[in-house]
Every structure is written in C-alpha cells, then in structure tokens.
Length: 126
Image (cartoon, rainbow, N blue to C red; front, side, top):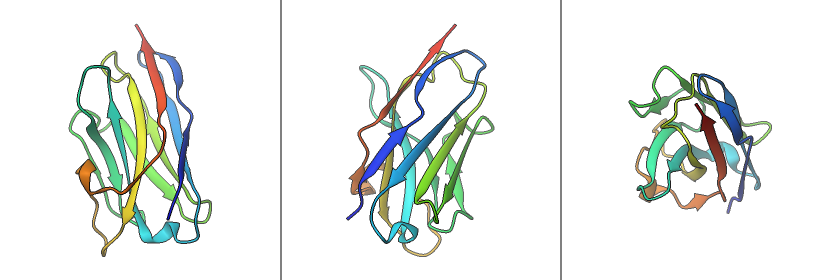
C-alpha cells in the first residue's frame, strides 16, 4: 500500500515555472513506478510524464516534452515534476500515481496505476 500527497501547485504567469512534489508513504516506494497525469475541466485525464523505479528511465507526453522534467528521490520517497515555460493550455489538476514496477518499465496508461493522490491545481495566467 502506498499513499500519495501532491503539493506545489498554484498560480503562475505564462512562461513561468512550477515544481510539483508527490510525497509517498510506505516502505516500498523504490519498488513503484511513478507517473504524473493531468485533467482539465471537461476533458479526459491525460498522461504527462512517467519514471521507472530507479529514475533512470522516463517518458513524456509530446505536449510537455522539453518543458517538463520528472525525477524522483527514493530516499525521500518523493517524485517531482519540474514544469517550465508553462502555457495557457497547461492548467489542470495534476495527479501523481504509483504502481508496482516490473524491471525498468515506465507506464503511460493511467488505468495501469493503482494508487493516486488527491491532485494539485495548476493555473496559468496570460
């Protein structure tokens, strides 16, 4: 079992940056692959970024590639999402998710994740 708590959301101007954090409970954080997803009002949840248990493998949605960076600190049981050059279409509720890892795989499909945080709101002003 793992519980996830996101933080770091807020209001930022277009072009600005935010760093989201997701703190996990439980003793086996390093055995979980992690992901970030987002959902805007009236839209379906979409994949943002994913990272393997070791942190050596990552994947990104095309919409955020080159602007967002996912990382993790297994000692702190925390995964991060560094968001730069934020755009007006980036605002959403951002969720982190966890699932048991198999090898160095990263997982981009939300339905494969079994644990979710409560989300943190990101708002971008123009």
